[in-house]
Image 1 (cartoon, helix red, strand yellow):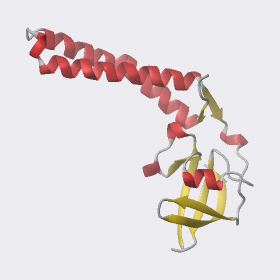
Image 2 (image 1 turned 60 degrees about the horizontal axis):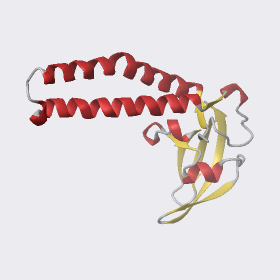
Image 3 (image 1 turned 90 degrees about the vertical axis):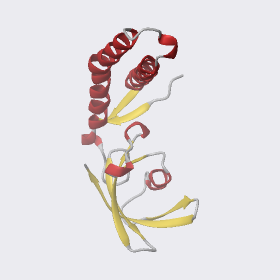
Length: 158
């Protein structure tokens, strides 16, 4: 059985856009590169051909992965996000109890997590620890260096 993929509407749109780009643009570009490389002659020692074939394999693999993810997608409707507890789609402000620093994260499914954009997975240590918790609660997050305590300062919708 395939695993359910949790996505926000933004995450769904990004995956659909990536899939369309791979199918309509990247496939053609790689096919042209292969055609040009074959024109160079003997393909047994043709690095351009080998590179293009490797890229083609990567693109086809990514297309299969994206199609599978979209087939198994469950969309988290942002209008249904409850701000009384942390859930997928919540934007949460946390305070590191030791450092007295605050940070803001949006909880998303693993398919669209992007720590550089402050989008953390519901399966990450922090995401798992705060899911279902309420504003004001203190949670313990186990990390390789020990345990970090966070206080949930605020829960909102995106």
